[in-house]
Image (cartoon, rainbow, N blue to C red; front, side, top):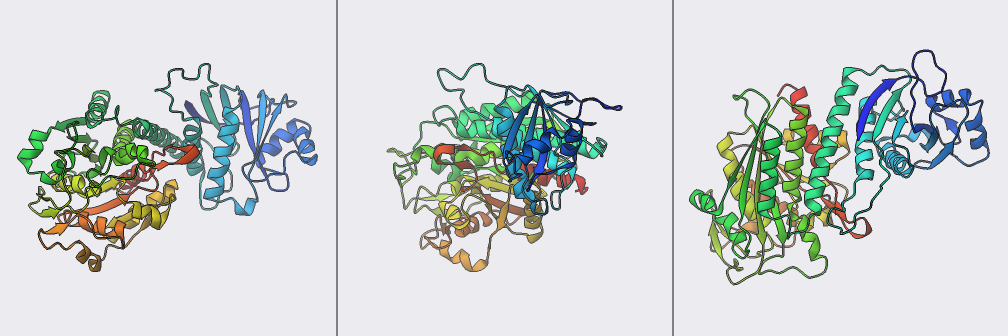
Length: 505
């Protein structure tokens, strides 16, 4: 999909610019009140649009649409009216809902290109750059399909190839162009994360993830990929990570991607993504219902790959390292048993009371490994606990950090992109739930505060650096009729890195 920004008027006869397209989209507020661009069209069309609105076919209700053909004196073949709701209530959430509805309606037509006059809408607390960014993300989200494994994928799909953002008053500034470029890169990073998440466990194995990382390095010279095998991890003393893969026929991989976008002296941001390509629970076997969704247990890894691709496409002036500890968690005669004690790379011993609490076991060794890069900041991303879903549902990711300032930076990036997180407590009082009679700690803290005690476990391996943990168990994928990976938290992480560059960090 191609995107561009142009200044000009949507009607047919203008002196300065003539913008033609298969469809032009303009907004209508509650009560049939026309947005500025819609007024321009209506005047040119001799009040054709306002007459239709007067008949009651379009009331301006938020996220409603009405497609018109052959509107007089309008260059475009179609005009799509988009309901925006009450002008005073047009906020971030409502705008995004409207964008998704608009893109679905647009993609249902046969138009190959479209002109959208939506960037200058009065969205509370947002500018045109934000409006354009969200429209791009909505276009990719509604166009996304995962049918590569179907024997007969849909042929002759209607494909919207080009979208222009029309501006009535503003000029296409460098800030707008930059926002557009960044949004496209983020959206494509989300597509990669979704594709990887939606692949089944018999295709997307640790070896497959490693190959994707190698391919990224071949595509982008700014990325260097290294893959460690199980024998390499044994030499490093990664007994915790290797305990998870003991029952699987698939070999574990420790994948590292190094993106060099700044001076070598600049300390990197390290992103650590949980890459359990299928989680049966191991000997602590999960219930059979919906176990198929445990192919999504590598969405943390997928988000790291998506972010690395996005920042490479942007050419972001920052050093970033992606670390992906990847394995399967399967039951077999060689699998780790409840009660087993293992030694992590840090030297700390762990009593494994539940083999289904395996994400923290692969992450803790990867977090210890991260220290070798002398990081400025480390952020791990994991579908870690069902307890986080109970706490926050499917709206916000759980956010933990050993520094409040870092937490605030990530929260701000989430608010910017509407890929939101919620700051959870990481208090010392919770640590005692991990006490073990036989090892330095146990890998579960019981039912109370399950997401918090999982973060407490990880915090014991992150004392050397600034660290945050994102529990994305509730946000990485959807179940039911809309089943599929969401691509979150690629927008949050990418925006956080963009903000660091903008802030001179």
